[in-house]
Image (tube, rainbow, N blue to C red; front, top):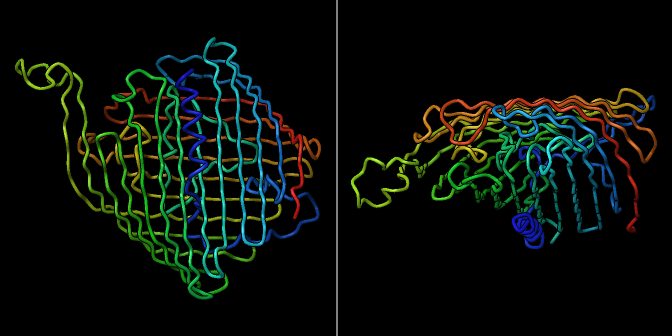
Length: 457
């Protein structure tokens, strides 16, 4: 209980001091969202980024009945369970002439009917702020965090595919089902509009992921701290396309290990008036490794009196190398359809299992309004994270997740959803923590917008 209270405090405090404003796609930062073509034959698709209306406070409730055939997320101790999930969403968005603020908080409780004592209380938070300091100068802030065990279930009509980003966040493609995870990331941007066509963006980010609730987390899992800074320059060639250059510096801390990454890149983005879009970035990644791995029992054969002979052996590796990085995103958005395809190759953290990895990830996200009252959602993510440290030579983690959902708009305040989610994770090579998992999750949920309060204009 004390660990849970401490985690909640750690998650809330950064919202008072943090850094923010990370856009989903760095190559698209200067692009505005196109207006969806009008289609009077059916209602327009509800978009997740429009769920909190401007200058409003909203309060949503949701309840979900589900069955998970691998509730522990552990193939070696496979246990199925029926689950009752109860959650809420508090959202505020306020826009004024020179400022914009938004805050979202989503707590939820999960009650496992077949597993006494495994009940969980999870929560997600996000905060965004934008200030037009001067005519050509803007500050943006963002902080996002979550505190949960297991695999979170996406909210109504939300994006699930990894979004393209030159400034990558903490690795979210790997899953650690049995550990309690506290994660928080903040970012601050200072943007200068040098001319009608050119723009500079200077930014810094800080991220933290800590594990608890498992035996020997310091030995079996890597707590991660990340610090990033960079600069983007973009030039608008036309009303629909931009080009640019970027530079990103990363420090990835894994306890006594620290890896450094330098990433110059070129960027290109195109946004069509019809709702189609394309973005690309690419460039080399220079990685300097400074890893320390403790091998349990590794000193058993050393003579008595040798330092740390009774515990474990620390093996350090220092190395440098160049890698190719980049990514691309293709999208199309209309009144009734949203489609996003993404692919990315980037140096990232190992999600708690490894130090620096080369993360190759691809995502697919489709949302379609089928009729006046029905929406269909289909998404899938596949990732392959390969260790870049010789201390974990030949080690990799392979992940695939996907879901299909139907939503029924019962009234302007009430939505029902039925869905199926599947997940698979495999370890290649030696990893000290249980990784392999197959999971099937079937759910029937109800979402109710209980209150919407205008905050003025």
